[in-house]
Length: 222
Image (tube, rainbow, N blue to C red; front, side):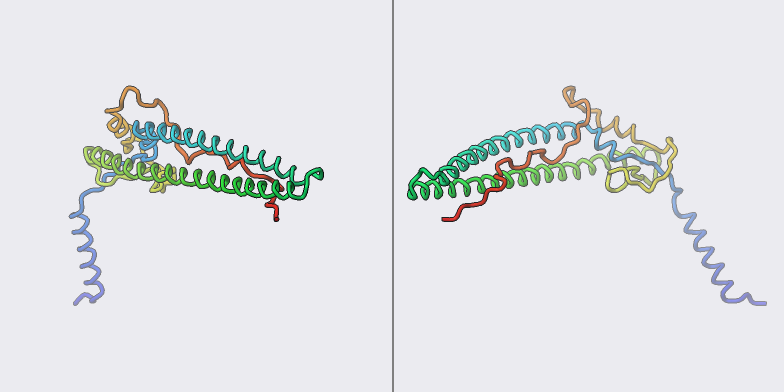
């Protein structure tokens, strides 16, 4: 009696899967915490310190521009008071009013200058950090891969997830599969003696908001 066609097909498929399973190497998994490695790398600590120093310089520049702007505000207020002084002649009032208008425009220009400086500085520092992070993760990834291979791993998973902010699909992994500490030792073997001791998260410049605004004041019309 002949076997049905569908039975023969099922047997053929099962045989193909069996051969494929035997042809593939056994999977051995290793895990690593890329976020921890990035944050703990001596080059990251140095970069963070550099970014924070540049941020502090930017803040000093913002403070200087704010001081200049606030000086314009005081001059504007004095001229504005003059233009409203009943003791002055109409000509003197008009002159003070025109000068006050110019000061107000100077205040607005200073505000834009400060805002542009802050935004440009933030963009620059963020770009530098982003480029550095990409290069470092690539460098660390190569080292982690080499170490995982030395352990015979055929698959290396990142516990921190693809974004590197602690989001991971790995719910549990035995500590025996984790090569993070070994990779950390390897990437920091050339750490200089004067490298920063602890990570200080680098961020966009903390420059204050422009301090040259004149609440309630608007340009006076001639």
